[in-house]
Amino acid sequence: MLVEVVLVLVLLVFLYRTFSKPKGLPPGVWGLPLVGTLLGHSTSLPAYFHKLQNKFGDVFTVRLGSRVVVVVSDYQLIKAAFNNPALQGRPDFFTFKIFSFFDNLGLVFSSGQVWQNGRRFALQHLKEFGMGKSKLEGTIEREVSVLLDHFSNTEGKPNELGRNLNVAILNVIWSLVAAPDRRYDINDEEMIYFANLMKVNFGEIQGPIVLLDHMPWLIPLIPQVIKDKWMDVDKVIRDTNTVFVFLKKVIEDHRKTLDPSHPWDYIDAYMIEAEAQKDNPDSTFRLDYKDLLTSVRNLFVAGSETTSATLRWVFLFMALYPDVQKKVQDEIDSVVPRDSLPTLEHKTILPYLQATICEVQRRASVVPLGMFHMATEDTTLAGYYIPKVSPSGGLKRPALTNNAEPIHVSVGLTSRAQLQAKRHGVRVTMDAVLPTDVLEQYATGAVAAAYTANIRMRREKRTKWE
Ligand code: HEM
Image (tube, rainbow, N blue to C red; front, side, top):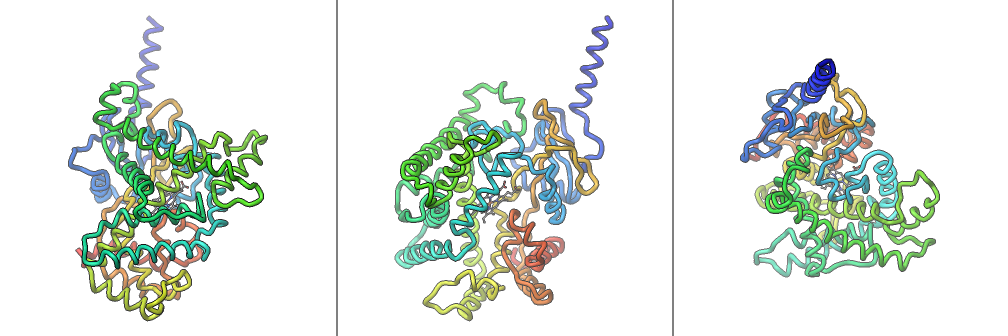
């Protein structure tokens, strides 16, 4: 009898600890055990978060499935969260695992030492191979010229933007990562197929498959046929593997021609590092190249659809707001001769263009929920308690997203950003809206004007463009 009582008590304590809301969490919606807040089919996650933000403020809790999610949508708090090492993990989402050989690999979905080493290495070597420098500028200029020719040749005819832009962008990333001397033509079938796969993968993971991310306890319970037919699990795996097979061949070609004294690109640099560290037991660089494959795929996926979608929004806004388009063009014409392209050097003397890019990025919000982060330690944010991920299962998994607010557009922002820039004597740069750059740059004050303007406009909710 005593044993039964103890067992029941242990079970009750377990259930209480598992299903009760930890003290000190930000206010929000707790929902039901295991399933959390069930969203209606008509509610998108960003729209739902926006509703919760209006009700609970810039930091709130929501239980998505069995995951406890803390949503942060205030710039200063996002910055504080990004700077807190306890909040730099990634949750073990099912989709994240598919993209990483079900292991802790790559740059985007990895955690801990693998993420730290991979990220440091990628930043160092991508810079070495031209990122953010005039070296890459030449490649970008080449792609822009090809695109401009293409647009002139198709003038007056319907033109599908996504495909051309994607190939141009992939060519730029390609030059850093996989082959500085090779470019694909806009009509290259292989590259179009590759670009489409990236895009498809981006969209697929927003379907019903996310239920497996939010309710990992469902994974062993749902029959495979439902996973495949309704959640597209087999398709996501197939598409991911097709990209891996394509990239594997690229990596194999690199292996055959590698000259350790002359690395050409990121893949070469990785191979040299993995070889140099092969006897280091703490090395996270792997000679089976699964980490390299994952990282290369991460760079292509993270860099291509985001940039392409942003550019497509630029085209749309310029078509919708010809007055803004004219001002941008006039400013460029006042600085850059008609027969040449703007360069990075012109960036600081094109404040209206910079502010417009800022505004388009804010308005388009191509990654509206950012990427989920995970607490690897108990920690605090804005005075609230954020508990460490429970080691035993899918429960208590706080994650942070960046700005979840739908966009409020105002043409006033651009002039306001300029005004702020003048007042503070600083440059207006588009880096303000890129989370990975913003931390370092904000400290220098370089982007303060654009960002202050952004935040103020959001608060005032001016909607002249709408
Ligand atoms: C307009 C273009 C882009 C947008 C809007 C964008 C947006 C984002 C966002 C929201 C994150 C998540 C940050 C976080 O919360 O952890 C991210 C991460 C990342 N992005 Fe981008 N990105 C863009 C372009 C690029 C490009 C061109 C590349 C590389 C070729 C790239 C590579 C990455 C990588 C590797 C990560 C993971 C960083 C980490 O976990 O440390 N992105 N990006």
